[in-house]
Length: 204
Image (tube, rainbow, N blue to C red; front, side, top):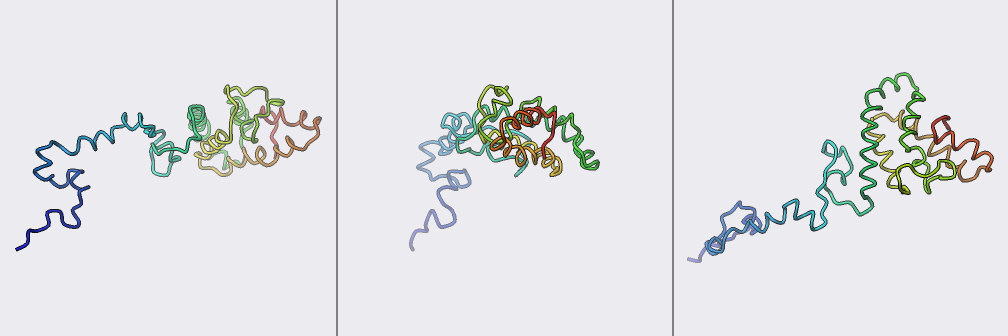
């Protein structure tokens, strides 16, 4: 009779590498087959290979962007984005989340909340690029923000779960203010923009 196939369908070599199937005697004589594979999944080794192994947040599935959860990002995010992410998340968790339901019920965001966000230097970041230096001075964060910094600001603010809060804050900044910045006469720009970016006035 013919000898039975020692590696029949359904028992691939990959299963052997994972330790699910005992390796053949020849492989046993050569030593363990899992050592090289294990090394390939060592976080320190992966980091040296340029693979993202950092995690951030609560690690709830779909609760954070994939680049927060050790998935590789396409190279758009650097340390300035990570630091900004932490700043905005800390602010949202400390100042917004405990109070946002009450604001929703009242139908109003307190003016001091706008001012606190303004004090973080975040409002000029939400009106597009470049940073409006003429009306807001130099960026207090020490760099020229890009559109991914703006994305992170809104992404983190959205974690409060209130569309009313988000649009109450962002609606005027992303809809009302950019046309003033782009097309208004200089006198109007200087009368409107600085006070809005300092949260002394609110634009619709």
